[in-house]
Length: 244
Length: 109
Image (cartoon, chains in turn brown, purple):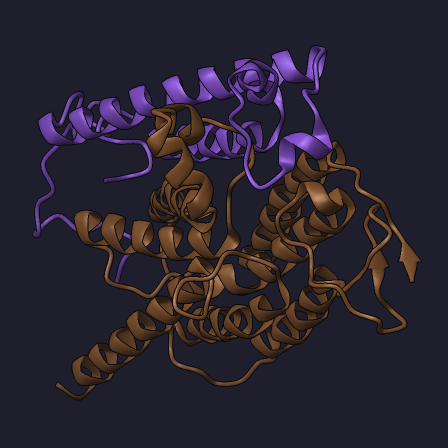
C-alpha cells in the first residue's frame, strides 16, 4: 500500500496550475498550428467555454451529491449548499463548456469547428488537476473504492484504495498522444475524439468510485451517457450537412 | 459577440479571467469557514478539512465575491453593448477620400 494521506490545501494550487498549464499548451499549439478563427472570435469562444464550464461543473458537482442536496432541501439550506466550497466536476465543465461554446458561436455567427485546439490542452489541464485530486485524498470526492492490489493508495484512513486519479492521468496521456498525431481528420474531429473517449472512460472508471447511485450508475455516469448521445447526434447532423 | 464588443472593450478576456478566478475561489475554503457553523458540508469534506481559517480563507472569499459580481456585471455590459451597438465604429479608421475604381496606383501594372 502506498501512503499518500489527505492534503486538501494543495488542491486549489494544483487546480490553478491546471488552468495555467492548459492555457500554456493552448497558446503553444495555436502559435504552432494556427487557428481556424481570428483572435477576437477565439476569445469569444473561450469566454463561452469558461462561463459554460463554470456553470456546468458546479451544477453537476452539486447534483452528484444528491443525498446532501435532498437533506439541504428539507432543512431549507439549499442556497447555502449552492455556495458551499468544492463540488465541481470535470464532466460538468466539459459538457457545460461545449454547450457554452455552441451557444456563443450561434449568437456570433461563427460557423467553423473551433474545438480541435482545446483537445490537447484539456488533456494536460485535467491530468495536472488530477494530481491535486490525488493529493487532496479523502477531502476530494474522487477517490477510489477499496482494493488489495499492490499499487493501492492509503489516503489517510488506513484503507488501500484504487488510485483512480493515476489511472485517469495514464488514460489522458494516451488520448493526448492520439489527438496530437497528425492524422488527416475533419475539422472538429480531434475535440470530438477527446470528448467522446473521456466521457466513455468516465462511465467505466466511475464504477471504481464510491458514489451514490441512481438506477445502477452515479449522476456523473448518467451525464456522460447523455453527453455521448449528444455527441452522436452532433456527428450525424454534421455528416448530413456535409452531404448536402 | 466580438472579443472587444462594439465599444472596443475586451469583454471576452475579462469574462475568461473572472470565470477562472471564481472557479478557483470556489475550490478554496473561504466559505467553509463561514458555513461551518451552519453545518452545511458536502460528502464528508468538512470532517476531513475542517474550517481553514486565516488569510487564505479571507482571500478566497473575497476573490469569489468580487469575481462573481464582476462576472455578472461584465456579461450584462457585454450583452448591452452588443445589443445597442454602443460606440460602434469608434475604432474604425476614417476614410479621408473615397476610393475610385478608375484611380489605380501608378506602380500597379
